[in-house]
Image 1 (spheres, rainbow, N blue to C red):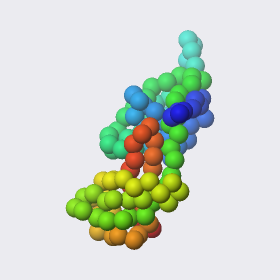
Image 2 (cartoon, rainbow, N blue to C red):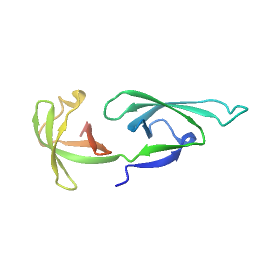
Image 3 (cartoon, rainbow, N blue to C red):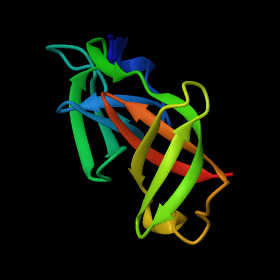
Length: 130
């Protein structure tokens, strides 16, 4: 299964996703320098980790290839809530599994509601509750 694709660093935009140190990150800031006498323009790409929330920085020449993760958005139905965890069912494959509920979504989580999750590189995270 392919978990990533390549993109040119200068084509990245804020809001897209990039792999920094093998961690999928959402790009929040891009700074670029002018090309110098000895090479191409450098890019400083700042991202926030999708799963852990940590801030990461990638320094790269503007014309270099960077890894971009393939992130799937899926709809799930919440079957039951137990503390900070929810048992959810994938609405496409009917697979049932446990998923941690983020603190900001805890009050809205209830059995029978639909939620949207992000899945990337074998990990899953609840994004929002519909």
